[in-house]
Image (cartoon, rainbow, N blue to C red; front, side, top):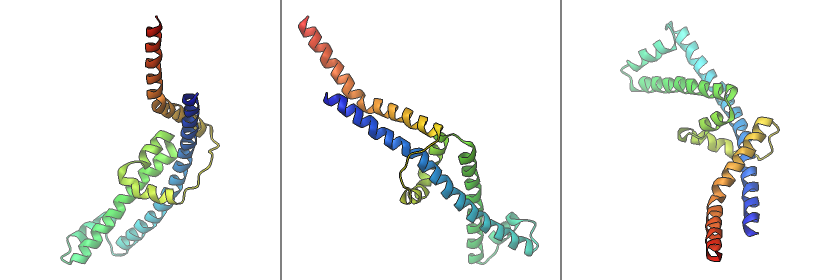
Length: 170
C-alpha cells in the first residue's frame, strides 16, 4: 500500500516538474530573442562605424584594430569580435527555438556554457501548465520515464522478496 502511494506521489511530482520544462523553454526563447535583438543592434552600430570610416566591412575594421599599437584599441577590437561571435551563437539558438523540437530546445538551454542565461530565465520564471499537445505529451512521457526510473528499485526489491516467499512456501 505504501509502495503504491509512493508510486503515485513520485509520478505526480514528476508530471508537475515535466510540465514546467516546455514553459521554461518558451521563457528561454523569449529571453534569447531579446538578447539577440540587443546584440544585433550593437553589431549594426559597429558595422555603421566601419562603413563611416571607409572599411570594407566590420571584419576588416576589427582586423585593422587588432593590428593597432594602442592596447585599448586592440582590447576594443577583441570585445567587438566577441560580440560578433555571440551574435552568431544567438542566431543558432534562435533557429533551434523556432524550428526545433522540445528535446533540442532543452539540450540547447541546459548546456553548461549557457547556465548563466538559464539562471537569469529561472529567476523570472513562474510555473504554469502548458496548453500545447506537444508539451503535454512530452510531460506525460517524461513523468512516466522518471517514475519508472525512480520506482524501479522498489519494484525489483519487492519482486525478489515475493519470489523468495514463494520459494519458502513451496
